[in-house]
Length: 125
Image (cartoon, rainbow, N blue to C red; front, side, top):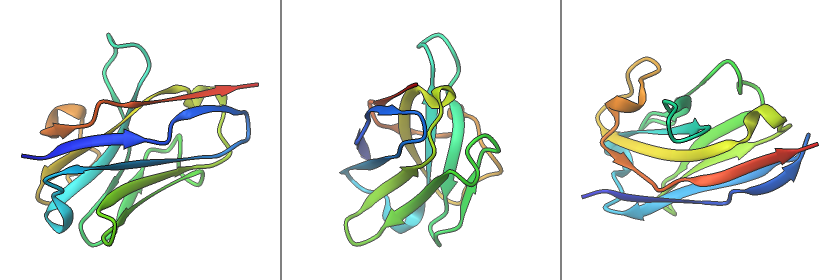
């Protein structure tokens, strides 16, 4: 069973950078679609941010394209999200997610079967 855990969140000034990591037990590795979501308030649906295929191909939401970079480190067995040029609109709880197989086109949160507990990113001006 896959158990994910995120780390690397924190508070940063507008324009700053953070690096988020996601690892855990039962790492799905080369057999899964790995993704990042974010959520503002527990009552709202999680917003898809980025996803990485097993071959390293990444896709991004328009709101983060050119600023965020997602990648899988197959040596450390972690999923990484590099966040650059952060704005206050990026403030959210960030989650990693996984599901076996290829990534569909910009899936909703309901597609994924494994989740981390989230890490908070707060951007202040």
